[in-house]
Length: 160
Length: 347
Ligand SMILES: [Zn+2]
Ligand SMILES: [Zn+2]
Image 1 (cartoon, rainbow over the protein chains, first blue to last red):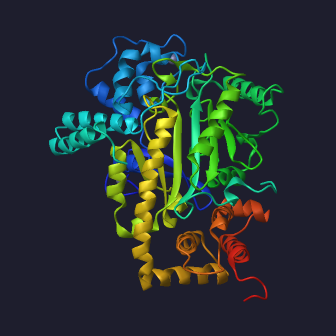
Image 2 (cartoon, rainbow over the protein chains, first blue to last red):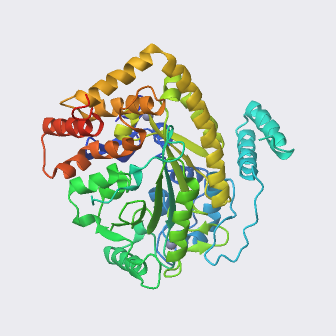
Image 3 (tube, helix red, strand yellow):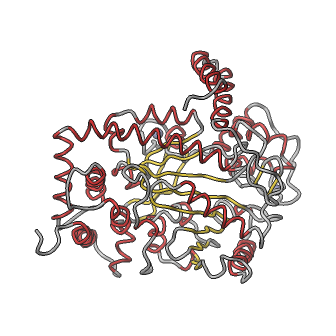
């Protein structure tokens, strides 16, 4: 089946949408799913991690919810809060790829961590630094050069 | 729908370009599997626990929310919730064990047993990231006194999809971008924004015809709520500036003015108004209102309300009867005419 958005590539996922008052299904290729915001980045990363030979030894299951790693990858979702500990080693690279960071900042349940005032543009800087890493990984050196200059500009006094 | 004015029946800041603001927080209860790994009885327990929390007399939210169990709705009622942006189409596809708790003007809601146990959501007209964030944050803080959310020092609030880890916060602006769409610069703009951790995408379904787009943050881990919304706001301002500049050029052309006035003619006079034609006219009329191309016609603060009521399922509920396609197009035409047509005697 062809993708219903571009009509070119093979559809790999179906999403729910409302068409003229009815709930309907829409078949999309991976590219269009991402573009339209339906992509499940984690499922894609999970698959590529498996392809990279990241196969779990034996059938390890989460002691809390019983999910195996393959269940998680297939669903594109983690089974329970405890899974993050059970499959920590395998989740960490995926989380890092998705967020560029693996350290929570912001609200906490006890509110005990003082929220340090963050300098303006710091978030932008973090994002740019991550992109720079990605650009270098992907050997897109022209992009990387632009990013490097932008990061320097951000670091050395902002003009907005 | 109740009689009380809904949150979207007001105009907000920068509403020439920004239609509305939505901030959501994903949360899960401690010590339970995520929704997709739960049995029906467990989903019921989660709902009971959340209902007990929002009904807790000691909390300031007591009595604020009405609970709608998704299973109890007709298909039309469920679709109408999705048309009004209260839930996603995915949420109403499989309705077992799901519920929507919402306050009377629908500006604050809690979707229970969707992707996560709770999705707390606050909506505001126009650009109001501070207002929507504060509303969602307050609701979360109040609830956290009655229930414990799954949290980890390193990964933050734990969610079924690791893409939402950390703050679990997604802030989203619905933007009307006919100028940039016409200029053809949206794909490049979207690519640039993607590089900054933001996503700009076309509205789904009928919205695609109306020049409506969604701008939201993608990254939730390693960036605080405040920084994420501040980034989104500064980028949104840039998009707004670019859109306004594009509109200046666009609206100077007689072709564009012609489209606006033709659309005005259609919405004020048509006797049959199919959804796709309405959405296209909507975009042109909204552009005309925002750029003040006409006087005394449809006002900007009526746009969202007419848009919501003109959607098929919502319109069907409003009319209180099932209709054929052409009856529905006639009902839509009459609804739009009475909201936007020349007033009796003044025409
Ligand atoms: Zn496609
Ligand atoms: Zn688990």
